[in-house]
Every structure is written in structure tokens, then in C-alpha cells.
Image (cartoon, rainbow, N blue to C red; front, side):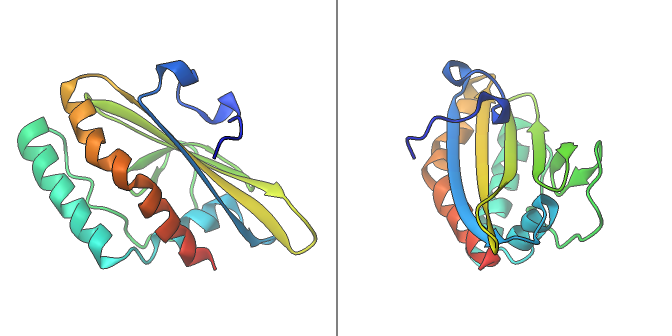
Length: 160
């Protein structure tokens, strides 16, 4: 997508990011940003569960990072300062959800933003931006950057 991205949904200015991705999906007008996140992550494919286990093993043993254990099927309301799986909830409203995860190697911001489209559907946009802090963060992002779009598009299918 070559559309200019609103800088308010990015972790840092665009020229300071090590990774950026944007995707979108039309959704039912009644779905909130939190509900969209839950629907997307409640039924991850088996290959993604395996990928999270591999990530946890290598990150813990090589990078000294705590395991994230992938997505769980939580359904409690998201609150500012709370958790959504391995993300910290840093902003939440009906039409926007800002999730951040930071460790000593990198920081990730995922934003789900909903805009009105027509009488039946809205447009959900998902923005992911990453800043890496060291070699391990850059090394970690190599495979992630190659499959991130595939992962997001697969999770978006849960909204159909």
C-alpha cells in the first residue's frame, strides 16, 4: 500500500522505523476496535501457534526475552493500562486500539483504526510499526518482516 500513513498511528517518525506495515479489511459497522482484535486473534492457525513457540524458544534462550506464548482467547474488556495478550493497551476507544510491546531489543506498536465507510460497513486499518534497538532486534525482525503481512491477512480472514 502506497497511501500516506497518518504519523499519529506510528511508533516514531517514518524515517526512524525499522519496519512498517499497513493492511485493511471491511467489517460490519457494529464491530468495535477491541472486538475486531478479539475476533482476529481468537482462532489463530496452527502454523502461527507453532511459530510463536519457535519464537519463544529462540528469544528466551538467545535474546533473554520472556516468552509471549502467542494469542489466547481472552474476552474481557480491554482497558487503558491493561493487557491484550502480550501487548500493553495504551489507547482504547470504540474506533481505535493502540497496542504496544517493548523489550530491550525492540518496540512494536499495533494500531487498529476504524473509519466509517457506508451504512453497513466500516473500514478497519491495521498499522504495525517497529523500532529496533540492537543487533538481536534487527535479527529477530528479519523473518518477522517477511511473514508479517501473511500473518495479518490470515488473521483478518477471521473477520469475514
